Length: 363
DNA sequence: ATCCCGGCTA
DNA sequence: TAGCCAGGAT
Image (cartoon, rainbow, N blue to C red; front, side):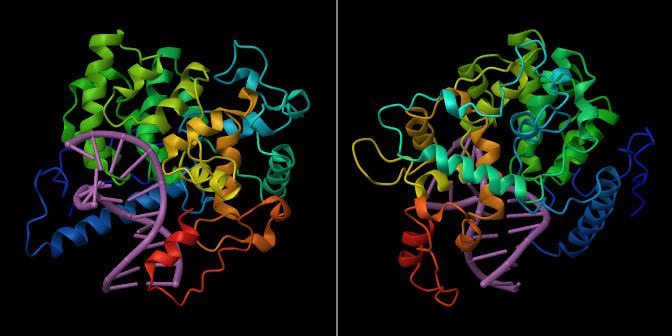
């Protein structure tokens, strides 16, 4: 295995793509005797992880979750929404009016008719828990990666960041974007010309890298042909891109275009809103069954000023406290207002009866 | 409903 | 080590 991976971040020397790469020969994974291959892969992954650490020292809070609001190269929406006065004037939101005054948009909230009682208190409670927990380490050096790019390229980088970030730790995602950038592959033109296998190697090991490499090629072509090298600016057009679903489409719209058409609902938002009783299937009291259903229900009463903020708020909360399995209700300050509080003490023992468990935890 | 890819954990 | 997790496609 002679593949070279330069260890230093500062080096701009592209990763050698000439040497053989276990992933470059498509249809690898022979049904048998894949041991050598697997070892090679593990080796490369370790190297990459080292590289990533050099790029971004590990964060304590980073956990496993995907901080979707932290797209590589972008200012952190969470910071944008919750810190006092960040230098967000220079952020991607520059140009539009000052970011919402986070000091409290709540006051001006006119509660919609069907808004859950006390939601403001819960919102504030969660916000406080979030700020007392180790504030999420601010978006490391990665914001240099994209922020200095001209608007069109920056938007494309946002799009790729969103695509790559799903099911992938920030660190891995940022490193992948970094490698793409090193190789001049952050523009639709370059992606269009590059080999899919090259892209696949560069983004490895982000989650689902094979599919994502394919999507990147298609997306680049679509951007060139239909959008003059820019990314789509409407929700429907974003959704039409392969690999871009509702969650990412709304996120991209927020970050790239500063346009809020809907709430970015991921599994955390979905889960927590149901636990809190904030959403239900239309005309019933039952839990919503999908993030999309949650999004629609939530939008019916949550004031638009909070549509961007709620995602980073609940994502962080969902990682630290209101976890999917065995939520840490004892560490939560809003249990008095939470219908689901302490109801999920699922005894770790009973793996059996999936039905029971799913009833309790799959909320 | 199942697959994708790899990290995490019981 | 087996199984869960997480958006999106099919």
